[in-house]
Image (tube, rainbow, N blue to C red; front, top):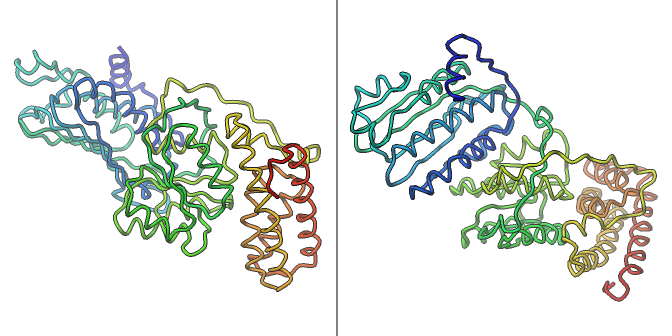
Length: 452
């Protein structure tokens, strides 16, 4: 019915084509999910091959109509395939400063078509021989509508087929580039407790607390987790394991996240790599994408955004579980407490043993790091001071120690710019004093549990 209505609008020239900013990969994954059960019922493999790291994360187009076309094409491919596979691929064929031309191809190992029929495949209710139509039916309105929609979006669609071998349908579409700020408000998604079951994920981060937080989140949903403390270790682990995804800290000793990703891509690894960074500055996402990473998550980790990104790249989301957005509460730093463990409690799903383990790490590591920052300052090693401040920042943010959140960022910036400002001494003393106050409070809350 929807196809008939759309066709009548197209014929009357009344089908609106509204454009919005969207995530192409997310739309393709959603389309695959819609038809995946049909492939499963027929015992077909439904494979995807996306040129990860090259497709721009935010594009302008009509995601609803694009997904409609992809679903139509995938449905036809599954319909006319008895054994083998249906494959969908996506790659960039032209990359300009303001736009990308994308090729989306759907190929099957189905019955194929004679060339005489390929020439009229886009006709309404087209069908091949009577014997074929009796068994499979025709293509209905799907191909005709797909062609009209693609052309209205300024693109092209071609079909290549061989009888008894299969069919390949290729879309070429141009999309203007956007930015993350252009995206509509994201919706909150709920996840089943085992949605990461069977997935093996590598966490690469030199910060103990960050590794622990990410590990607990992933373990809560059934993932198998492996950790690495630097890029060099990560390269070795990737060569010896079959990972589904890598979480990659950007700033690490020995080999940083950019260099590690560059090496992995040069070696032919196409697995998803998601950047973890405490630097939520303009241009950071683009830099990560340019190095071959697929996505970008800022620290401290927010569970919903973290899981959405993992879900997106592992293709595990259940669209039926989408719910309305939660209202975000604005932080009121002036009235906020010294710190809060709310994030840790939420991440650990109420398991106090995990919370204790995390606060124990905080209480053990933080004084040492603060002391390292102070020694670097007194030695006039401002770059090292800024580097340590960067590591401190994510831990401070995780516990929402608002009193020194801005202070530690200022120290990091001054260190990176090698400016020995007169405020540094007082700022470092304030951080040391505040961290000690937090540790004292934690020890009172968990007496005997913190080994410090």
